[in-house]
Image 1 (cartoon, rainbow, N blue to C red):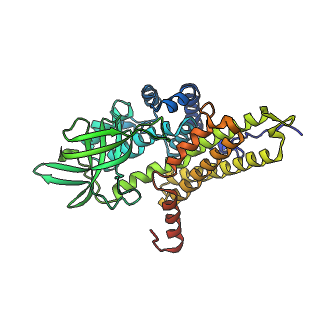
Image 2 (image 1 turned 45 degrees about the vertical axis):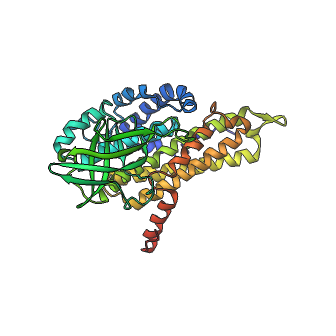
Image 3 (image 1 turned 45 degrees about the horizontal axis):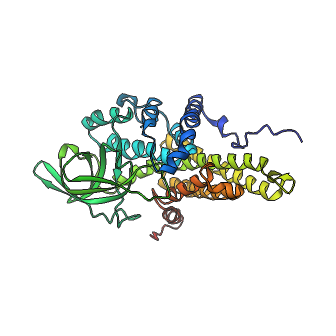
Length: 390
């Protein structure tokens, strides 16, 4: 049989559907992941540390706030390019992609979309340059998937606001110079930029994690934190503010796990060719080939879903239900593939010398944050039936 001319990790030649600029972005970030992330990420995961020295390099490549306008120091890329950034970063590790997602979609985006022009000029160029890191304070200890059940409050006091409450599971919390915090006010939920060092504001890093170990996760605590009205995001009120940010972030998350899945498939495939049992490589067995083929099938489906979603987003036609469908499908796909790849590797698969166990553990968080799998299933169910089953 003649050797296949297909890319085994891109069976439908999605690459040919990319523009020249999109392909260049993918190649650039892939090279960064190969050269800078993969050599260190296993040790970072083992030690439970985020590689902060990569932040200036990510900024230099234009990966922070990549879709925002160039007038604010950002790269002005399209949605598909941002998706490819997420895919290649998560091929390295979900923690690296999470850092970029939070900085870009959950912190820079709300300042751009909901902030004043002064706020945009003050923060976005510094954030794009990686000199100011942000975090996103929405989830609360009791709240989880029900952000409307928000206990954090902000009350007017003259020209200031007094914030009280707590946020939990906050990526970048202890790295952040600013937090975009959502709080209940007499006029509905509003967003506030809270700067590190403000009296009464404390971030506490969460340890003993078995997932996203190469990422900083924190609790945020607010005890009569006073911020000026100039720090309030003036152009949105209500849940549509934070939910709009989550739609942006979830879009990127539909792409990210594709990278994790490709990394797992590649490692399982290469391992199966060299692991000899009963006088032949396990790649020569039907059971392993069926598993690898199913991984490739599911990755192909996910690639096409996210590419079409990106085209819809760039055309201004993307709907939240479409994001939910892709997030649900693609993260589940990647988690299942990571577990299956771990199984193919046998005992070797439980060590961080290989990537599947690390990706599997990380994806346990990815399938939960930015809306659990069940939440996204119910979003699609509501679209089909017109009935809210939450």
